[in-house]
Length: 110
Image 1 (cartoon, rainbow, N blue to C red):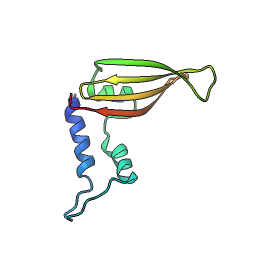
Image 2: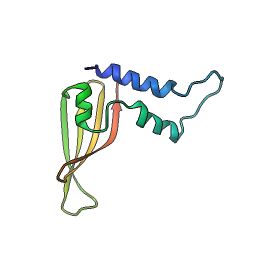
Image 3: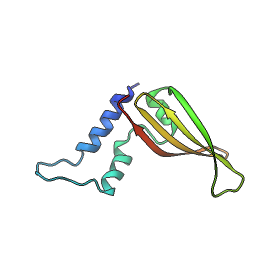
């Protein structure tokens, strides 16, 4: 099992240096570069189960109920999964089976 900081450093390095060439120009981060990072640089997966496979159990999970805007009367959840230096946030749809949508990732130096 890799440490969070090692995995995050590898992913960020792939993102930052993936498009470097020998030219002396500043490359802007376009939507294509962001898409490349999301689908090729982010190696931890897009569900809490996949992230847990790579990093083990989180320090803490914080769940906050939220009303589903599209289905009246349905309560979904915003779920923060805390690891040292990494907090993925999921929108969890109250369906059977439950469905998670990775909505936000916070990376810190902690």
